Length: 248
Picture (cartoon, rainbow, N blue to C red):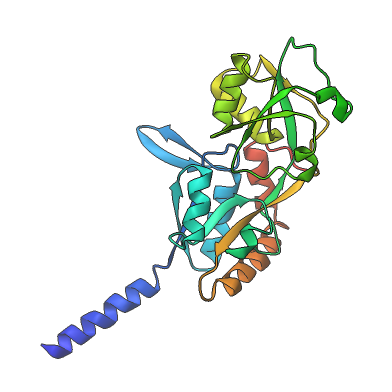
């Protein structure tokens, strides 16, 4: 009997060893990561979702994604209840509780969206003086954006920001160019909004960052190395093309 239990325990340990799962947290942020319902089933989609799964699979890991507001995502990795957060900017504050790979998943470029028909322009910072902009409170947009002479209105997410824009409650919404266009299409307002091509900050690298758990510094480095190699493949660019991502 004891021998049978011992063999069963070995088999369970072996099974668990081949079923390594990493828990990632993120929020709905198309076209990089989002959920759609297809035939009554929730499907996880997006460039970064596909890239993450591909690279981690090569490392021997399966990926389980938990979807929640961004502020909660940050708390989850800070408290180490999640292993990875994506897609995240690098800041000194976040580096206190996250291991960042050298290689980013990609880059974002934040621009200002406005409602068509508004007589506003953005050629110099002074053009924006007194205008009200909606921004997601827990996002990092860069120091250049923070210095603009705008009136800042924090919102939970950019969906809320665009709703306020359409109601005339704010003049502008700041968002990554790809995300803003994707959200506008989803909300059915793509023909009613436009954006200034002049970015509010430099293109920002975005990462899959790992919680500061034992050994995760090496895990982040291996992920970085494999991601760098994956970016050299046609499959990587096919993923970007599939989602219509503007890359720079």
